[in-house]
Image (tube, rainbow, N blue to C red):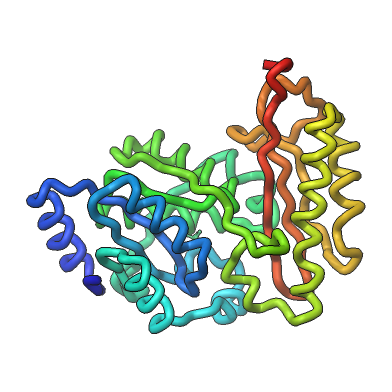
Length: 286
Ligand code: PAF
């Protein structure tokens, strides 16, 4: 696996792929890689001849210096994991490489960033879109893979890609889960033993709502109440919403003829976890 630290090295690698007739897939990450990330690499490998991951803890998407400092970093472990899964190249830029002194342009995403995570994390999605558009420009990828766990991020990146006419196919890959249902996340490493035991209750709640949806329940308040009843009492819910998967607007009533997304963000101690499930209409409703 080639380790690339400068933009020039990435461009030279990309040119060699083009010369070999390879399509390139990018998997952007912030490192501390787990099986969920590796499933994104496998998805990328299934779609393109050459796969590059980026590992960069992006300072512009953090709301507090404390959260940025606390973000887990493990370059050696990340390289080993990427080698193990057969990734072709990894881009490991420094902060100065992506944000040289004097850089001030930011990519602003509009109203999709106003709800859910955006409501309590001002500027977060601006930071995400800024770094993702930098990566798209630098790598010149044909395909980019993002996890469906970050449903709002995925919707916003798809919108940005359309709006800015990036010639990139943005693909969402299913959420990888631990055996007890907890969505895999680098943040899980920061949970105490007790919080780790309580964390799967978020998925249990979403699954309860999903089961009720499958039985025909369409009332958003009822679905949310069923989910909330399963959450551990120690979980501090930031939001629990039933929303339109494309516009992310909360649904106050649902006719059942289209998909809905039930999404949660909750704190266990200091750690903020997110998860979601897509609720699909029954065949009779379509
Ligand atoms: O989902 C993430 O890990 C990050 O938000 C991303 C897309 C790598 C941008 O820094």
